[in-house]
Image (cartoon, rainbow, N blue to C red; front, side):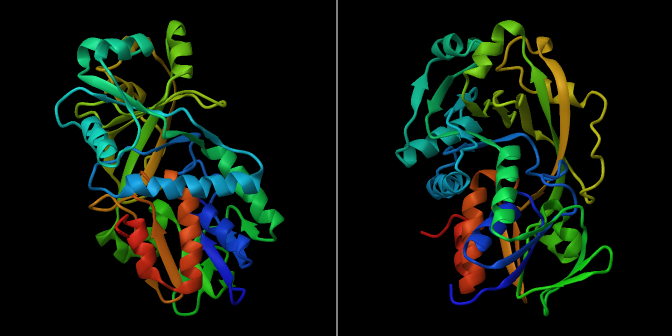
Length: 371
């Protein structure tokens, strides 16, 4: 690093927290501004736990990028002196030829990544919450598991404060002056800096309305469930499930470290122009999400709904990360709901880009097309 820069980071989701951490670690003077508390329960990365996994389609490029994602998290664990990752591995369940679980398996094969195949009967014996007659096959891989968001956010805040960074919670940003690196806050105060990094998630189009041509906003939800008592131990020992096959586009995070059993589906989303709208769960929403998972799960009516959590994501048309430089600002948006797993690595790459100005290199990495 040749000089110390004064940098304002707008948004304290995982991309903002990680960028602030990496910039602060490199010796820059960082101010992190978040419109809510940290973690913000309304933010895309404010939930209890998320999946990290090697499973991607063969052509995506992101399977290889997971290596750097793990390296980024390992650096953070060293800095924290503790890990917020649980190496459960991951499982895919195929129910129809060519479904997403099968595409993920093909991606693992193409990259020569490790996994073990299971017959339907073997899968149901090992994981009795599955119905064998609904399966074509299942597979498990050791290269994945659970990231615990609340612990990660708290740890990053501790590192930032210990490193002399300024952290401002419950402060909304109203405008960013691209030419002068000035950030105007809701109370009229103005923060001036050499660079501004905007990682505002679904709120980014409020600051830059023209980005609606690149970023679409969707409101979705996940449901937390209590399984039948005789299946609790099986779920507690289960890997994360990256896809349940068919057209469900469903994923599951097992319970662990105080976080519950979570179901989510890409089918359960609606376009939403306002990131603040419809943030209260609707009547019957939990049941609707839960019921998308039969099949391949058995006895779903016995799973008691504990909580429904809403979320808003930005999506690009090709479901990849988005980044653009404008004046003194660098704007980064996570890749369509898949971005958390890359959080620490994104922060390191953003910090490098702020220093060397090579936005093209950052974009190539974020799009997983470096090679």
